Length: 81
Image 1 (cartoon, helix red, strand yellow):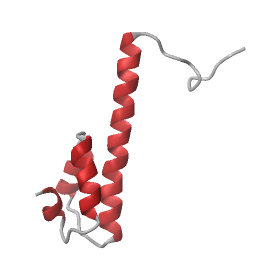
Image 2 (tube, helix red, strand yellow):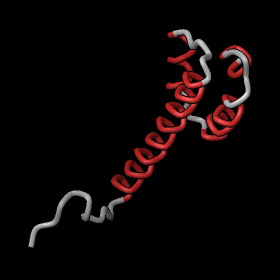
Image 3 (tube, helix red, strand yellow):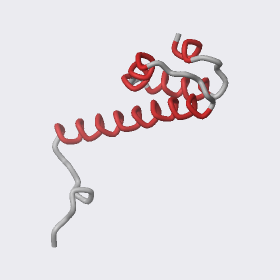
Image 4 (tube, rainbow, N blue to C red):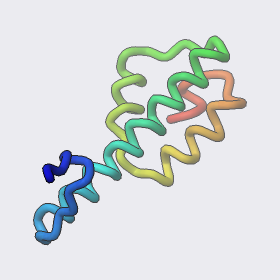
């Protein structure tokens, strides 16, 4: 019986660390995209520089804060300072 990659259970410390890191990076990317989608839906203009800063953020607490604040801020500067 063959297993797909999604069914395989990694057991080495190296693999587990990198699997967790990849999961955390994926969550951060999703949160950053959510911030940008909320801002776009509200008609808030986001410069390329601000978009890059938002997408580069890996701090989950900051991203969580930005998601909530993106619902009410009037500008991207008010969001990320």
